[in-house]
Image (cartoon, rainbow, N blue to C red; front, top):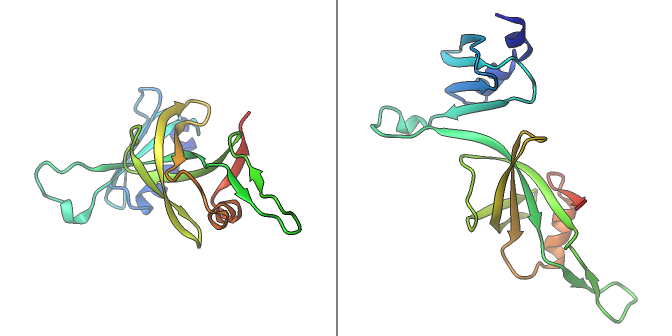
Length: 179
């Protein structure tokens, strides 16, 4: 196997171990090797740069053999969530305080089957707190991150303080200021 393909060694088997039936790593259009791992095919089509894309196709076993079924390409995307501002009462104060969220976003990486279009509703999970709905505003490819960033907004016009605190406390969500 060429040196370039050895750099990516471990990436293909890791995807197969996660359930992929076919793994295609791409970038430069040069074939650097084909590997059969646990009966699954891995195509090494790039020079091995860690930032190149990896597409793992997973088949649902109940769909095997059906004519016209389409395999799913699982992709990791970054969710950039805008939540509404909220008013909270602080202890010892008579008037509620406004928490403005216009200049921050909650960030989380998730795996999805396909890139959602504007207007699509996504159900987001908050660790140990449940889920909520968000609406996709736009989906853009970010070359520097080598993934799609899905801009979403909280579906409801307001967010309850307990739900806001759950997002702040969730280990899988990060609060980032807009630059």
